[in-house]
Image (tube, rainbow, N blue to C red; front, side, top):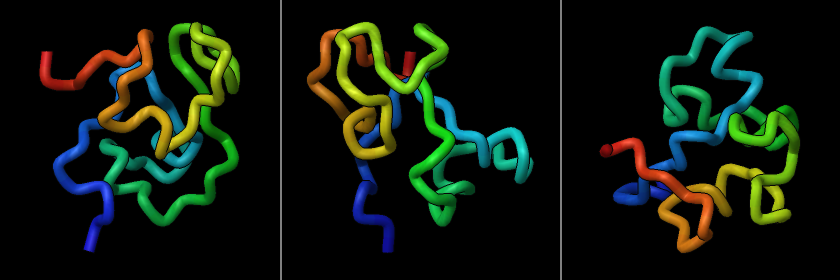
Length: 71
């Protein structure tokens, strides 16, 4: 069962598994390790707010830089 169900991932969050393993969604790469994550706005491991870009922090977040995939 997905512990994050109902929470949308930030549209700017990226993971290496999305490109290397051919996963089209975050849920497809759910088993991927936490390494290899970044913010597509900053192209770094930190988001524009200076906080880490990771699967948990960038999902259904109240961060100022968060943008829903349900635009």
